[in-house]
Image 1 (cartoon, rainbow, N blue to C red):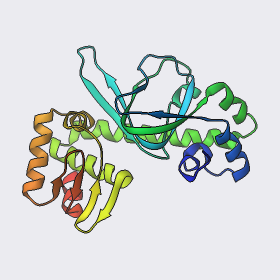
Image 2 (tube, one colour; image 1 turned 90 degrees about the vertical axis):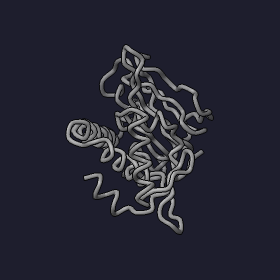
Image 3 (tube, one colour; image 1 turned 135 degrees about the vertical axis):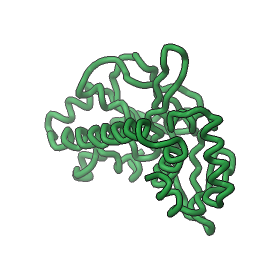
Length: 225
């Protein structure tokens, strides 16, 4: 279970190999399938997770049933660490987007481990700060960017983590449904589909089910600004 993917998580950044491997060995691996829920918004937060394989989405649901995706996480990324610093109910629901393996660690075990390694707490705080920065950017985009701009930015962000170079450009297997992609950019499915169709007509992207090939990254970057 001790592999480079798990060790690339912020929890282990800057640590020597021996203590990192010791902590990984104490973590529990869980295989989950698309649609499985690891925890619901409002549940007690008592453990941290690292994605080893697959994809996990973090989302919130409004009182009228609408859902907003906060993030889509892949290998080497972690979630559930917020309650370590601010004990309380989960602020989002974690759902499996693509069949995955996650490793989990109880907060009581993690806190005991952190007491001897305060530098790890700093790494975790930096990871939280990066997530907060992305959240602030997403809020600004909702106010200042139109839907096509947000779609272009979302595709580029997904490509940095899930993209693979191909002859024509970058293939991004995001594994999101049309509805989930719309939730990620905070717009209706119809509006997002219209933007994607326009991008495809211009030759910027090619749609392939739950994947997309970015054919003209430069144009997408300009549209995302």
